[in-house]
Length: 82
Image (tube, rainbow, N blue to C red; front, side, top):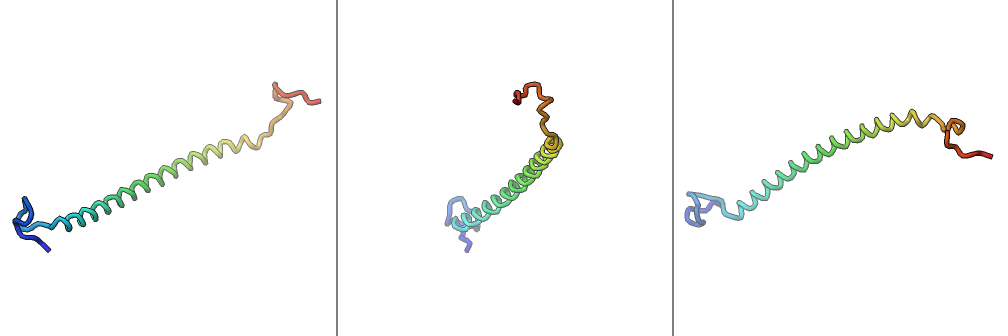
């Protein structure tokens, strides 16, 4: 599994062969990207929670006005009804 000194340039007494290094590097990158993805997903979930609470507050603020009906007699620009 390990290669003796001299088989690859600038190697110490024992070193990893390039294919094993590539596999380890691939695993490291895969784990790193998975962690970064989980963090991004967590941040996005937090953003959605904040945004939905803001929309809920807007909806609650507008609900009070929905119950009030439009009174045509109080409208100064109302159309004349024949």
